[in-house]
Each structure stands twice: as structure tokens, then as C-alpha cells.
Length: 249
Image (cartoon, rainbow, N blue to C red; front, side, top):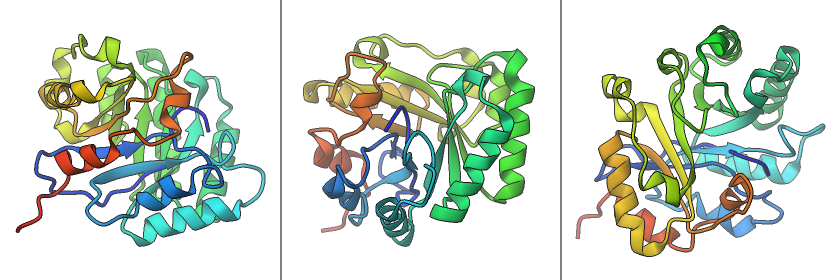
């Protein structure tokens, strides 16, 4: 799977206000235990993105259908990953991919990966999001910028991924002033290469910067980070325990 991928919303009301967005697990055939683990009770999932084969694929995939269905039954929202290629993707191709995700996997929204960030591209992205909302009223739309876009995008998507990159950059990152005008629920941070010893620091940064959805992993990738998203972090249980709902004793 490439870049960002599947979505669920079963963790509202967590003790810290943070929840998890899963951006790109490997295909269920390669990572069956990881997909099954996402349905575990009390996992604070906000979303998981489904990428079958660089998109929805050319035909329904029974393993992805099963994984998507199990997540949906557990109360999760599965997002279909749409590749925007920073605004160069053909509009008709995007609409076709979206229809296949809806027809084959009954997704509850979409992750618009590699979304443009510049003001000049905003009308094009608005056209796409308006079309998707007409196709699926109530769709949850996540714009996968990977950095802070022109502020107008905050009125276009339900959530913006405003950081996607390594811990070495995230620990020194800053956010523009305009983000303070929006609630934390509007922003997502995806960070790879986070050592276990710095996990609490990373969580503090997310809270300080006003992001409510996170994916922190100790996995690394020498390229753009896409491979780092394909497996679970080594400290998955620790993340769940730190930001999940508290259980009364």
C-alpha cells in the first residue's frame, strides 16, 4: 500500500482528547493480525484508510471487503484512499475510483492523499469534495496534505493532515497562527521514526499544536515514509493505553 490508507471512528471521548488515524496498513493478506487488532474493544480509532491496490483496484477484493466489513461492524468508519497526485489526477478517474470504493467496500468517507496545498488549487479540490459529498451525504473527508496548506482548505475537508513525516522534523515543528481558529478535531499528524522513549513527548507536541488525530510509529522508511505506515508500531498497546478511554476499576 502507498502513502495513507483505512478509517474508523470508535474512540470518541478519550481521556486525552486524542485518537488514532491509521494511514496505510499493508494488504489484509499480508497483515491479517494487524487488521483484526483494530477491531479490539476500547481502541481509540478515529479513522483507518483502505488502499486495495493504489486505490480501489480493478475488481472487488474479498479480503479487503472482509476487513472493511469487520471494521464497520465494530463501529469504525472506513475511508477509501484517493490519489490526487498534488492536483494532477484526472477528475473523472477520481470519481470512478470513489464509485468503486462505495459499491465494493461501502466506505464511510475518503482520504484524499497527496492533496494540493496552494491557494490556486483550492477550487479544484472544492469541486472534488463537493462531488464526493453529493455521492455520499455525511462522508468523512480527510485531506492528506502532509504539511500546512492555504487556510481555505480548512473549510473544505473535515480533517487536514498537516504533518506527515519523520520524528526528526516533527519534534522541532511549528504551526501557523491560523490553525488556532479551528478545533483540534480538524487536524491530524502522522509521524514515523518516533522512539518509544520519546512517545510521551510526541503526544505533548500533538496536544500543544492542536491536533486530535495521530499516528505515531517507531517504524522508519528511507523513502517518503509510505512504508513506515504499513505495519503497527512496536508500542501499539502502549499508545492505546495512553490515549484510550479509562476503564473504571
